[in-house]
Image 1 (spheres, rainbow, N blue to C red):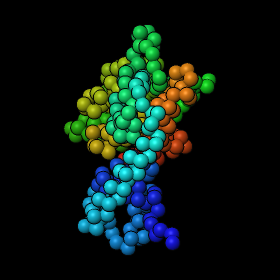
Image 2: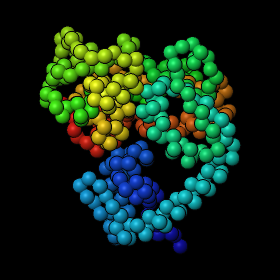
Image 3: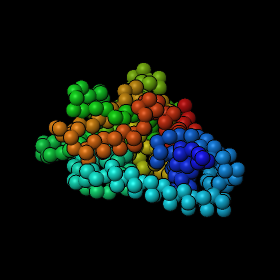
Image 4: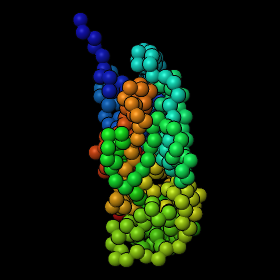
Length: 317
């Protein structure tokens, strides 16, 4: 006699949404859209014949039956994860040395470290940032994450995520300042520029219709991490990689000003040490990175991706 059970995707979506009490956070964890989580939860509720969530405009809460069901599903998921890890993790252990830029490490990688540790508790992750001096580039590594304006050639490197850039600022900056409704209005505020090798403001102004790069005021900072931090502190407007700002927009520390992106996308690439395919911990890390990044086709449509990740349509152009 066959088992009468709900689909695994619906159970997985429910478990994540119930654990976070947020469809948006569940979508972020599972690398899908918020609407996909909602759809799977509806499928499960229809299968059970009972509502599992009480839906409010900005939040959700579990019903009594939902809370009881969560306890059972979470227990089973924990057991399944443990059994899976016992098989997969026998040879996936030891130190793993990862290098990344300060911006990528701070804005994208660190918020995901806990998920990696839960999946691979026996891998000792060692993360260091890539500096501008020669000593950093000479340090040994297992995996190095770089960013460039072109996809990398060669078999030892591969692109795993790409991102355009969008202007963002702190909501505090706009509270007592002039309104922003057109791209020209950005010039009423400090424009946070980066080192010339990274700065793409002139390109962005061209995309939105400027015939010549406008004169701007504001400091020039070394890298995207510094401009993003300055923007969060209300020091001006930054042109930030879309993959760095989704979580900050969802939290309300940044707001997107226009949906137009710089024409050139940044490619984030993985470079491996030699013979990496024979080292299970590196193979596991690579698979995890690609899973966290999501499908390339989804990320290449940065505006749609940002809207899905944040659940906001507050993109004014």
